[in-house]
Length: 120
Image 1: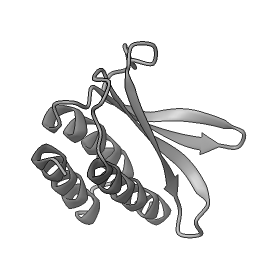
Image 2 (image 1 turned 180 degrees about the vertical axis):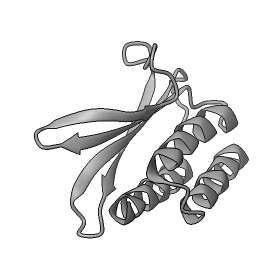
Image 3 (image 1 turned 90 degrees about the vertical axis):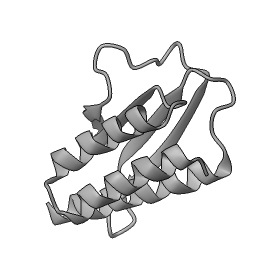
């Protein structure tokens, strides 16, 4: 796991456990990952509402890199009942950016976000 991903993860988890409010957690997540991990260029958190989804937070609203990215990971955000309530999307301009330890850390972040959603 990269040190940068570790640092971002610690900042995000601190925000989760301080119970700052769910929108604050979303914002801290997207900004910490982009600012601390050099190969993460865009992060978005989507929440499902009925049959649609909405972008709850993003590192950039102008450019989501959908067409420019070379690497993309998606992590389901699950509530305490293990129902998928959203999606954490991470994009990189680099073709080979992520490793298995990044995946594990990002899964943990998505899980923490999902559990916190139920509290708020």
